[in-house]
Amino acid sequence: MRNTLQHILDTIHWLCLAILDFTVVILIFWCGYEMWIISPHRVNPSPPAYQLSDMLLFASIIVVTLILGGTYKPQSSVFHVVKLKNMVKYSSIGFIFVLIISFFTRSLLVGRLQTVYTFIIMLPLLILERSMIDVLWNKLVTQKFQLKHIVIYGAGDTGKRLVKSIKNHPKLGYKVVAFFDDKKTNDSVVMANPVPVLGGKSAFKKYLKRVKRKIDEVIIAMPAASSNKSCEIMEICQQVDMPYKFVPSLNELALHRVRQEQLDGIPLFGVKELKLSIPSRIIKRIFDIIVTILLLLLLSPIFGIIVFLIKLTTKGSIVFKQKRIGQHGDEFILYKFRTMYPDTPEYAVHPKKSNDPRVTKLGRYLRRTSLDELPQFLNVLKGEMSVVGPRPEMPFIVENYNDIHRERLNVKPGITGLWQISGDRSLPIHENIDHDLYYIENQSLLLDIIIVLQTVWFGLVRGVGAK
Image (cartoon, rainbow, N blue to C red):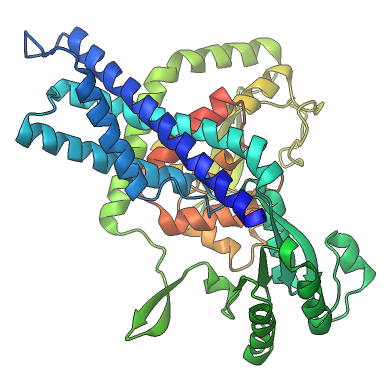
């Protein structure tokens, strides 16, 4: 019954997305056409009339390409940006296919300027539409009807980390209902983790037989256990026909970088190099400079208004300066518009509540909209920061980094990043390391563009400020 409901909901989800994408693409095509018609730069004095058949063909090609690219499959990553990245990739491929049809067959007439206008508005609108629908679907459906009940075998650090990640990412629809572990756990461990520990191997086997239809999956979280021990747990799952996954026995530092390939059916594991190539670094730097200059020009009136209001409402400096740690552990001075009263200690605990008495009235708005971060574009121009990257930390926090945390220092810190647009902001920056590791491993120009667009959505439309 649970699997049937899951299948029905997944089908409804992708059908809704496909219909909405089709509708939005039709709107995009129409907007591109109208912008082309009124454009003073249009070369053709007698443009072809707007055809419904062209609009339907254009939308059909884009949606079919998105379907073939697997963008309507259920989300399997905690990073919403993964789905958006694939959507941008395959919608762009579909758009190129439209241009090829237009060029060779003339069955779809698209003006050159119309092509430019359509593509410019297509990606932001599709990203906005997908973001809004996914938020609504997660709140109305996933967290109420699509919860997957899972059991974790292994109540150690890895198992607890899994529970913490699942609780921090409810959009995935997982619910941990029980822990099993051969080792006895004391009260403090149980109290720190509200999921009950029900016993060892024998109790695990009885439990699965008793509640098999109520459990969707088992995760074996014992990377340090012997292979025989892990195989015993897998055999129990196989005996009761229970799907399972396991955390491999690999060094923790390298785990997130492991890549698998096969040689004549033999699995081979390797560690991916996280450094950007020289051409990629040059492209990223050019992107940083272009985005920074454009934003500084566009937002210069807002800069002036903020400076005037800070000076008008409180005493003290306009810009707050603080030492932060950048790439390779180098110190630099980070700039922000001051949002707290002048007598606040420089390295005071970060405000967690909107009504924190240390924050000024203007500061609350600046923090909520991330406008206090605008001076950091000067850090970008100086080459100390990037537009997109992990947030820079204070020196005394970096001193306590472990080996995994120090991987954040392999790239330039950024004004925005995956953590800022995730909505999973209950943990301090350095404890929410998964977002930074994913970005460092998968950084690209396309990913940076998506994160910047999502930042506008989160920071200005939804009012989620950066820390």
